[in-house]
Image (cartoon, rainbow, N blue to C red; front, side, top):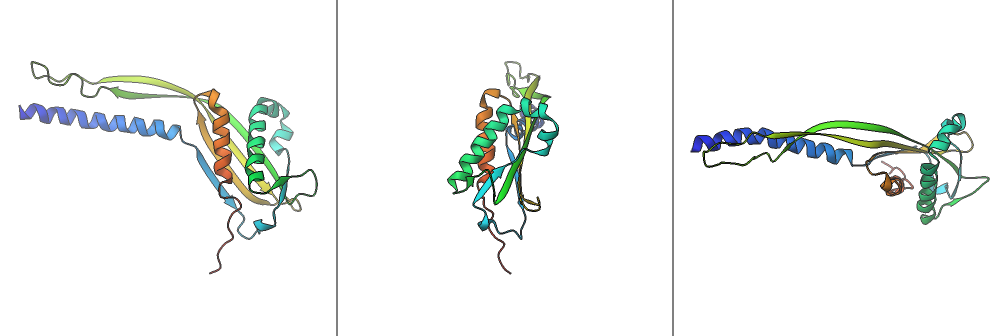
Amino acid sequence: MDKYVTAVVRKAVPALLVVAGCLLLVARLNAQKINVDFRRDFDFSKVHNYEWRTHPIFEKNPELSDRYSTAIQLVMNETNKQLMKKGYRPVSSTPDVLLTFFVTAQDVKQTFSELMDPFGTGYGWYGWYAPPVWVTRTQEYLHGTLLMDMVDPNDFGLLWRASATDNISDFRNRDKNVDSAVKKMFKKFPPKPKKAE
């Protein structure tokens, strides 16, 4: 009987590793990725207001502005909300910094296989082990990217940049996805000055 147990374990362990890999893949697909960088020699304590500027890509390609009009409005609304909570205010002239951003999304179709019921029916009356059943699934989602820049209005030098990537499988949740990404971008804004060594 022990040899049967050993055989089952040998068959089950690789299968479980594959299932764990699939679960990690799905978890990774659903996670937002946020990156933030900034100019270390800039004093962000001097920033009190900002002005929105249309991103050059949208200026050169107005059809993209139309295509992403809802996303653009969502990003601007949530950014204003987050910055105004921190005491910053939007202005239409003489800003301390300029804010501009770009959004894009592409349809993605991904196929992966997973093992269903890796233990099968287990030991039956005759001591046999049922073969594993592999199921292939196709997942469709939108892979979205948001890139936001804070620019010096005098020389147009880049002061701060944040990027967010996310996969939206349920389009009804896009508002929540955008809000979450913007909140994470500005969570640690303004950047803390570099400590003197």
